[in-house]
Image (cartoon, rainbow over all chains, first blue to last red; front, side):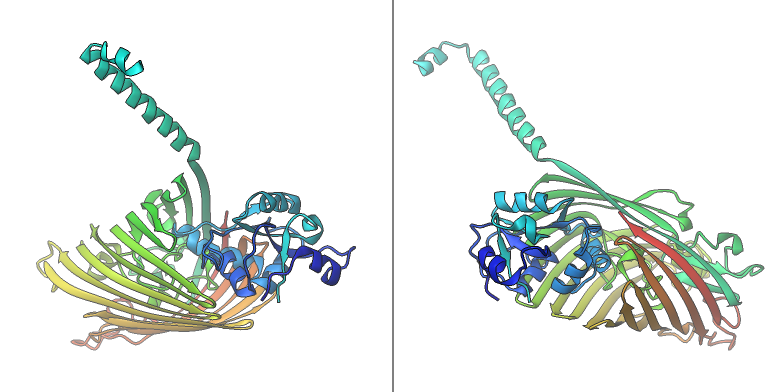
Length: 136
Length: 379
């Protein structure tokens, strides 16, 4: 799956008045990121992008609207299943779940500042500031 | 010029200056290090209540001796007064991140079976040696089973309890070292772990109960675990070797002061087919027993139902039983759930000398039906 620049997403895929959750990376990130890579990073199965560069996942608060459905679609787990999955790593002391943020703006700001970060945020907040990764 | 003037210092002053400089550098480094230090606290809990509705008693957790006894049963330890205390537990875990690669983790657990007295169950240092390689040293969980790491975290698994028949090792933690290597390639993931350590079980809860006398066990472990995932499938293999010494002052005990070369092999498989998850785990503990479970879990929205069958068979004829559990889970938000479970155990053990029913279950017959409910959460 090719990484699709935000402009293309904005122009072709995302209706202007309808915000939805998307996976975003820094504008300087030129990795080719597939849905499988996103899943592996979000589930902590890998800590790096395909090139080997460090990858730090962040997401919205678990109570954020639409997060449950988006995690189901993109990672194959509901928010509860996602947290249950991560609790294994947390309570085994071998991993830390993606840091959560209250607003999409917080996620976008962090992704815009740090090229290592990959996040889930609202497409409206992401527009023009970061790259959006097309998900299947 | 500076070096010239420095030579005018008395040697002791020069030494003092060196010490001051070292202190300054050390304090600077320490400050820098402390600036990096961060802490986090997380936790879990399960409030579990159960009642035997048919039969005299049911062992729901062998390691912790979580036993639901029917009122009036003298052989089953707790009476109905203990119906909320057999599996209820609360855990708090603190993690101190010393630097991006080094963390100290401590987990304190309070259990109903131990009068809710908090005990440090895990305490270890973890360090990333490379991107995919990390080492842990300290007091850790023995990774014998697929659910060993999260056996206390009810929210992390679909059942009200892990299948007791297949999760009955008496020793659960060890003091030692564990090395983990992770690899991911597309949908394929692999985690390899090797570990070694010891555990001194003074008055082993399970063994002392089974033999009606104090049993002490000293373990020396080495083990290896290979956990492979491919898309919705997971296969986990573990092998543990244990040089175990068992001691008791009871002269009548057949296993008095014996040494065992114990081997534990566990094979676990999980496959997710849409909303249906299938799981199976089989293990062999040489020279003592074999056990297993199979389970199907169907998820619909925030609800799920499960059907599980498990078996335990001692190599000697004394102990043999199988269990069927039917249960329901409902997620509440993203960090809580409630579960209901009905479990029926069929006792097939017997005393080979007298033909009496199961001497481990200690009642005849040991068949039992138990209903349970739980509330699990993490934070």
